[in-house]
Image (cartoon, rainbow, N blue to C red):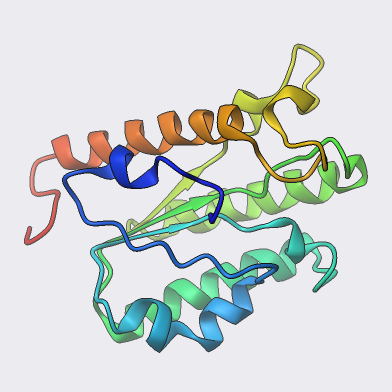
Length: 177
């Protein structure tokens, strides 16, 4: 999320606290939960799993990624503070087409998890980043073929903004509800 430049403007007037950790995996957030999330008592957490889940730091299966995200949400439930988790599915990237089946499997597992937990909203931006052939379009990524560029983040922003607005429109939704 360090590269997601317009997130504060997108979620205004809500305060936004960016806590991106380079090459982090979900377990890093879990391990540092008290300092990254618990201390601040946010009403919303946005989770965008990175490429590190499958490469560089870890070599998770789809099941392991879904379980790690579920464990983070469970930890938050134990802490009792966060109202809503917006969880992005892993992003398919031009550099790693070998991950597409694993990402599809993780998405299906996360969809089932989100249906069972009303605090979790699953956001799948892959269709917004794909061309007619359903492959990620390189023009939404930086030259490394992994990290989104400003156009890619804009698509994530539209998706997140739409879901946050829908949640705040629902009766009884919003902070203090």
